[in-house]
Image (cartoon, rainbow, N blue to C red; front, side, top):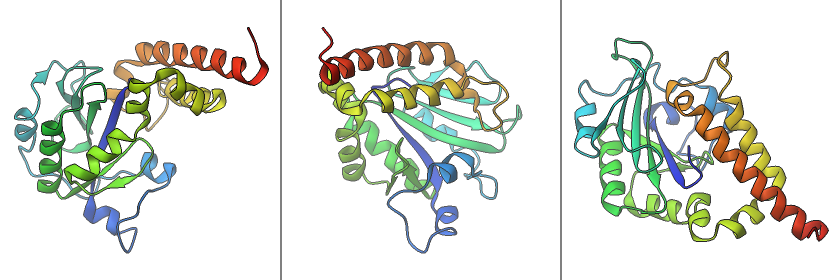
Length: 214
């Protein structure tokens, strides 16, 4: 995922409420990443046709996924448990923070409500599928801050935090990782290169302001 993209993962609201009395503001990373959200519930058959109306289809490099939109811009994907593409494993959209489309957000929210889902952000915050809430989250995200002021954003993150994000992206490249998804593996090399450049830039900025390196 490019640093200027804001990811929204669909989580079945019924399953989430089975773990909490009310919708939480956020969930833990372990729960977000390790729990199989769609193992006990599935979206209605043919729901992908609704995504066809939101973004144009894009060629998929895997038989276990479908893709829409344009990589590194606005895009979407549906991951399936196997090549039959019957049982869904993940539904997600990524919004290009350099060209935020309220209409796209509107349509994403409509789809989420139709599927009985809430939306999870990259920071594992839980959003009700309403345009105002999602747009506010995008505009306050690291992705949007990076677009507006990349140097200040990298400096505010701090070199250790950027390094941690890079390490997480690098970990996604490990083929033996059981929770790795096809979509994330698609652009492993590109993502690692992008985040490597971010780490390098952040390191220089961090050193400059902390040690007066010239």
